[in-house]
Length: 420
Image (cartoon, rainbow, N blue to C red; front, side, top):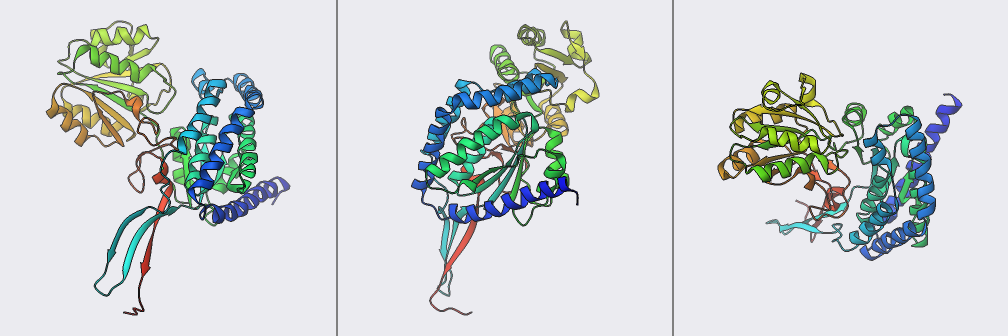
C-alpha cells in the first residue's frame, strides 16, 4: 500500500470508528437534546456567514476556472439568503415529531407474549453527493434528529464550502454537549476513497447517493453497503386533450423554468395530438429562454424547434432545455414515461378525472401529479421539513425522504417466562 493509499484508508478507518461511537450516544438521546443541538447549529450558521461565504467564493472561482455550467454553479452557490434559509430549516426541524421510539404496532400472542414494533435509528449513514453544499446541512440535521451519525462525502467542487459548514456544525454540536463525531466530512474527494467508502460494511448501515444519474449508477453498481437509490429526474408533464390551455402552459413553464437545475424540474413535455395549443406552449417556453427540442409533429406545429434525437428522451438536461413529443393517447404517454422516466415525478394536466386516474395508476414514479407542477416533490412542500433526497426505489423509502425514512424498526417482546 502506498503512503497516499494509507492516508486515505486511515481517514476512513478513523472517521468510521468515531462515527460508530457517536451513533451509540445519539441513539439514546432524548428529543430535547437533539433539538437543542439543531438550534445551536442554526445559530452557528448565522454567526459564521462571512466565513462560509468566503469558502463558497473559493469554490465558485475554482468552478468557473474548471468550466462548470451555470446550472452547476447555481447549485454550488451560497448567499446570505440561502444560509438564512438553511438556518430557518434547522429551527423548523425542531418542531417536527421525532420518529425515534414511535410505536408502529403492538399485539399479544395466545401464549401471552406481548410484542411491539418501534422506530429506531439506522445507525451510521453515509451520504455521497455533488456540488450542493446545502445538502451538507440538510443531511447532518436529518441524521441528528433521527439519532444517526453521518459520514459526508461531497464533491471536490464544493470542498471549501463543505469544510466550512461541517466545522460550524461540529463546533455547535460540542457547544450543545453532543459528540462532534456525529457529523464527519471525508475531506479526500478522490474516486479511490469514494470506492472504499462504498464497501465499508463494518461501518455504514446504509449509503445514500444524491446527485447525477452517473453518480447514482456508480454507487448502486459498486457498493456492497446497502444503498437507498435517490433519483435523477427525467420528469414529464403530459398535457391531455382535455387540458385547460392556461393551466397547462402555466404548469409546464413553471415545471421547466422555475429552477431548471434541480431534479424535480420537468425535462420532457408530452402533448395529446388533439390539444390545439402546442405552438402557444412552445412560444411561452421560448419566451423564458428555453431551448425546445421536438419530434417531427412538434416541428410541423411550431417555429424555432430543434429536432429531438432518440438520445433526448432519456436525458436529464438540468438546464433551460426541454424535449416535446406528440402522443395519441394517455396510454401512449404512460408507456413513453415508463420507458424513459426515472421513477421520480410525473404530471398530467387534464379536466378528465378518468384520464387522470388512468395516468396516476399507470405511471411508475414516486410522485404522480394531477393538475400541478412537478416542482412540489420536495420535503418542505410535502410537510416533512428538510429532506435527504427523493428516493426512486421501492424498498424502505420512496419519494421525499424525511425523518421516518432515516429510521428502521425493532420488535420488542415481553413475556412472563415463556419458553415455547
